[in-house]
Image 1: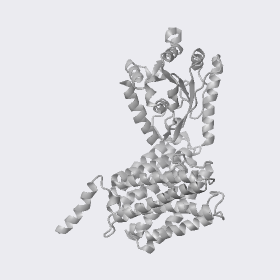
Image 2: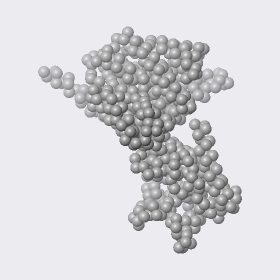
Image 3: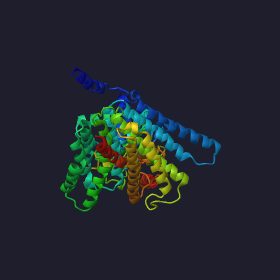
Length: 214
Length: 331
C-alpha cells in the first residue's frame, strides 16, 4: 500500500508539479534499477531537495529508497515521526544517540537498512546551506561506506532548489532548476576521510560539468 | 424585436459548449490550419529527401527544429481550438514559463524574492483582466500598477545595494514575458464585429502564424543568401538579406491572409510589415540580453530552439504592436 501511495505522490503528482510549476528538469534515472542497494548523495539547499530526489526515482523502486532525516526535526512528536516514515519513507536518525546506545547510532541504523536491501538518500552536508555553495561534508557517510565498501554510491547535484525555497524562507518562488545524477561509484579507500573527499569531489564536479555545458 | 433576441442568444449558447471545435467549424481558420500543416509536411519531406540525396549535409539541427515546430503547432492549436477558457489558461501558462526562464537567468539578489513572488502573482491577475475583457485595467495593470508597486516591495526589504538593477530587471522581465504576451489572450475578449467571422481566434492565428513564419523566413533567407551582417555584435547570424527577404515575404503573406482579420488587404499587408519589423526587434532585444549574460539559449526546453523564451521573444513585441494597430484600425 505504501508503495502505491509513494508512487502516486512522488512519481506522478509531485513530479509533474515540480516540472510544470517549479521548473525542475529531471534526469533519466532508469540505470538505478541495475543495482540492488545504493546510496544517493546530494548537496542540500532546500526542503524541496528530498521530494525532488524521490520524484526523480524510477517508480518501481521508490519504496526501497529511504531518505535519511534528522530525528530531532522530522520526528519531534510521535505523530510527525509516523507521518515522515510513511509519506517520506524517511529513516529517522538521532544525531546524538551514539553515546547512549550504540545500536541506535546513525551509523549502525544506516548499515542495518543497507543490509536489509534498502537504499538510502543522504545529504552529507548534514544541513541546508547557501545555494550553489558546498559545505564541508560530515564524516558519517564515510564511516558507513568504509564498513560496506561493496555498496555503490551515486553523486547527485541539485541546482536552483536553494533559489526556489532557501533555508529559513516560507514562500516558494519558482526558479528553473535541475537534478543531475552521476554514475555509480565505489569507494577507493578504507579511510573515511579519503572517502569523504572522494564524494565531495564527485558532487562538485557534477555541478561544474553541467554549468559549462549549459 | 424577436429577431434581435434570437441573434443575441445564439453566440452565448455556443460559448457554453465546452468542446466546440471552433477552428474546424470556421472555414477561414480551417484553411490556414491546412496551410500550416502543409508547410510543416513540406519542410519535413524536404529535409528527409535532402538527407537521402546528400548524406554529407548536416541537417541534424534543422530536423530537430522542424520536429519541434510540429509539437509546438499541435500544442498551440490544441490549446486554442477547444474552448476559449482553455486558451486563457494556456497563454497564461506560457507567460509563466517565459517569466520563470528570464528570472532564472538574470542574476537577482536573495532580497528580491518577495518582489518576484508578487510579480508572479501579477500573471493570473493580468490574464483575469483579459478574460473579463476590462480593457482599461488590462492596459494599465502592469505598466502602471505593478511598475509602481514592485520597486516599493523591493525597498521594503531594506537592502539598497544593487536595487536599481533589481528594479529595472524585474520590470523588464514582467514587460517582456507577461504584458506583451497577454495581448494574445485579449484578442479572445474583443467584441464581435458584424460580418467578421474569424473573430479573436482569427486575429490570434494571424499574429502567431505571421510572427513565426517571419522568424522562419528571415532565418531561411539569411541561410541561403545572407552576406552583409546587420548587427554582428549582438546577433552574428542576422543579415540584411535575411531581414529584407523575411519582411517582404511576410508582408505578401499577410496581404493574402487578410480574411483572418477585419482589415482590408492593403491594411493587412501594412500591419504584416510592422509585425515582421517588430518580430525582428523582439528577437534582437532578447539576443542582446542573452549576450550580456553570456548564454546562447534561455533554457533547453525545446530541442533545436533553446528555451520557451527563445521562441516567443518576437511575440513579446509583435503581440502588443499588432493588437493596438488592429484595435485602432478596426475597433
